[in-house]
Image (cartoon, rainbow, N blue to C red):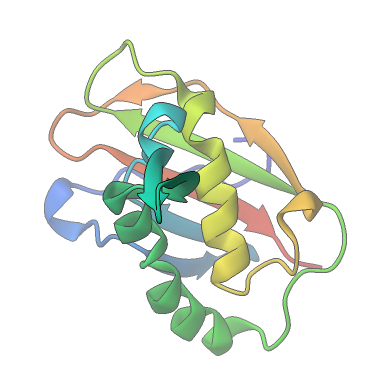
Length: 145
């Protein structure tokens, strides 16, 4: 792990979606695997005009931001306002998933949860994905100064 603290393996029974933990100065967020780019947006029509909107799956994923927002107030009272490295570790159910396809929604989740003031401050570091068919998830780690 680039931030210096190894991510400990948690059996599927102990993994809670949208969970924020602090361990040795490193914050760790566990979320479900974000929807891919292809599942993020769809075209909808209003008054005969097309417009792009989030899909139901993407809206459900971003709804987890409220749970994270409440938890983040326990650890800090203002969002990150400087460029900060965030480590993204994917535990996937299958080997042929493109990890970078879900990054946009994961970054949007961090912004909506109030962890960062703007997702442009996120410097993503994607770690080698691992296969865990029992509990696919994304673990986001970062240090707060």
